[in-house]
Length: 378
Ligand code: PLP
Image (cartoon, rainbow, N blue to C red; front, side, top):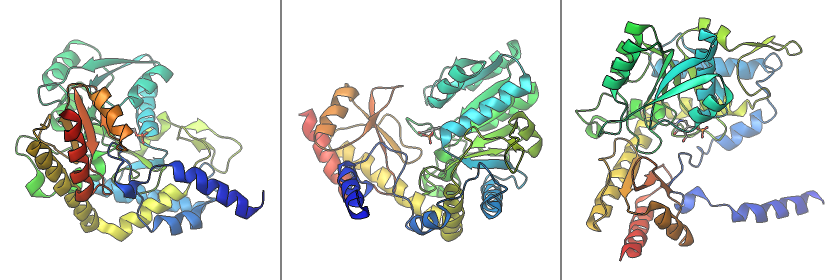
């Protein structure tokens, strides 16, 4: 095939894909990357952070980006990586716990945890204890405290922005338990990490403790993904650790590379995720992210109101830009919506449809969607 034919053929495949801008993707935590990404990807296309000695500029960018995210999370000394996504980030944190303890590590994890932790359990010598959730759909802190005091536990996982409902576990209490009992605490803020720091006061609820970062002394590591609400192109996940000594629990000898230790799970890895995250964070600044988060929260509230007008109720008053709409048979409704061109996802912890109000979801899409959903119920 010549180049023209190749590109024409690829265009046909691409036509089959859904497009964020059509507003029909309502269940994804990813969105259309910031427009500057195209230029940055072109500039950094061939870079490989798996061999950082060859791409010293890109490696420097990664260190700077980790510094910027570290500052956002109140820890200038954090070390970490921009990797493939939240899954790799959580796997890396679980590897640290496993290697610190050097035996079958026991880890407390909320029932609301993302399935990437199931992969970790499957791949490593770990034993997860699933902690029940309270009526607010957050980790039962009393259960954690009692369990940790009565058993030998190596790690605790808390979620700041659960995948299904966007709920925030009481990380401050988990941090106290972790310190008192010398247990490693990992916070999965894959989604919430680029939301919570930018939430306007008017969207915050009194009964929720929004503290989730390194300002809490018990927090040892945080997953925070630029390719979700950070607006970076995929792949750009983030893992930050409290301090550099933890690196030794990740390092594997890599004798034939320019750096002889490698900490990430993926070997050869793109550099453009780092460059895009650096560029987008510099370009948007805190005010830019605040504006984006406020728009998403405004649209989230709009969706809840619109749904209520049609008698469709929410499972909880949304905490971030994730809405769970009660539905007796979410699997069936999800399929019917798909036939009509709308792609939502479903919750596992409760009978509900799950909608993530990402920046590509606008009021006009919400209007159309709610009408279609209501029409399925009559
Ligand atoms: N953690 C949380 C809380 C998530 O919501 C997700 C994805 O939705 C992940 C981890 C996994 O992220 P990724 O799909 O980027 O691997």
